[in-house]
Image (tube, rainbow, N blue to C red; front, top):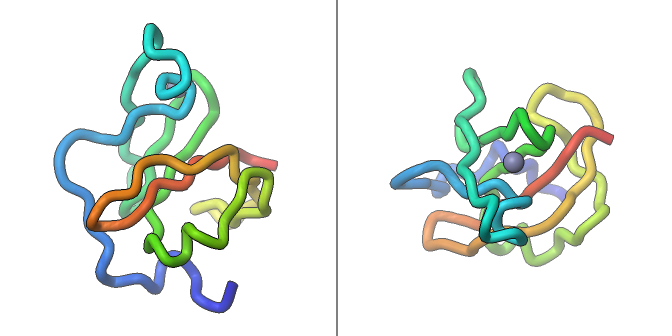
Length: 97
Ligand SMILES: [Zn+2]
């Protein structure tokens, strides 16, 4: 990857926070993530230690589950899955390595 997610300036998200990935797969446990303070377009779920970030959809095409994914706080992370593609970008779910 030559372009870091932070470089994409055409990303936008409107409406409520994205659903937690766990809830996407278990509809009876559907809950939303919370915005991570100090980081734009990053959300977290305390309950599941999961995070989500919006990336450009063309970047998301090359991202797969279990890929390394740098965390918003600088530590190493792993992709746990991809979420919805929207006009403003695609959600990538990740957790600490
Ligand atoms: Zn959760």
